[in-house]
Image (tube, rainbow, N blue to C red):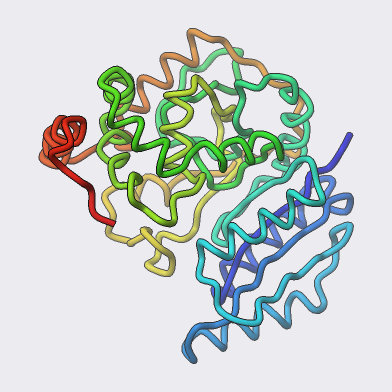
Length: 317
C-alpha cells in the first residue's frame, strides 16, 4: 500500500497543533507516512510565543517516516500558506492528506484514508476521501460510508494530485461568472443547496478563490462529483474556542461539533455504501443545521442573479 503524506499549515496555535500531530502519530502507519508542515511566519509579536513553541516541538518530533518543515521567511497569511504548500506537495507526490491544525484523529484514520485512495483511484467522480462525518443521524445498516455531494468537508481529507489540480484550475472566478450567467446552472445549484447558492455569488470577484469546503461543494454539485464520508467520524475539530477563523464558540452549530465522539476503531476494513442510502443522507444534510441558510440573503442573491445575467449588476471585489 502507498502512504500519502500528511500536510498541515500552521502558525501559532501550539496546543491545537500538538494535539493534532500527536493524534496522527498514534495512527497505524504513521511511521510509514511523511509529515509536511508549512509553518507561516508570525505577522505580529503576539503570535511569536506560539510560533516558537511549534518550531521547537517540530525540531525534536519523531514517529513519522520523515518530518518536513517548510518555515516561511515572511508572513504569507493562511490562504497563501495553504496554496504554496499544496503546490510543493503536488510537485513531489501523487496523493496527499490535508488537515488544518485544530483537528484530532481516530487511530484508524490513516488506514482509512490510504485504503480509500487506493480503492477509488480510478473513479474520477470521487473528489476526496473525507475523514470527517457530519453530526446527523445515519441509518443503522450494513453500510459504513456514504457518497456525499452537497457538502464537502476539508476537516481532514485525502485526495489525488490530479483531482486537486483539476479543482484548482476549474474553481476560478470565471467558473462562478459562468454559473451566474446560466439560468439552468443556478437552478441546479439552488435545488441542491440554497446555502451554497447564497455563498457562490461572492466567488465571482474573490481574488482568493480556491478549492475549499464551499467551492468544492459547489463544484461537486455542478460537476457531478462526490466525497466518500464515514458514518462514524474519524476527525473532530477542536477549534470552536474562538482561536480559529469562523469558529466562534457561540456559533449555533458549535455545540453539535463539540459533542462529537471519534471512532474507536484501530483499523479500517473496507468501504460499504449504497447509492440510495447515500442520497437519503445527502438530503438529510441539507435539511439539518449544516444546510441552514439566511433566507433574506438567499432572496437578495436571487435578485442579484437576475440582474447579473442581464448585465444590470456587478459584484464587488
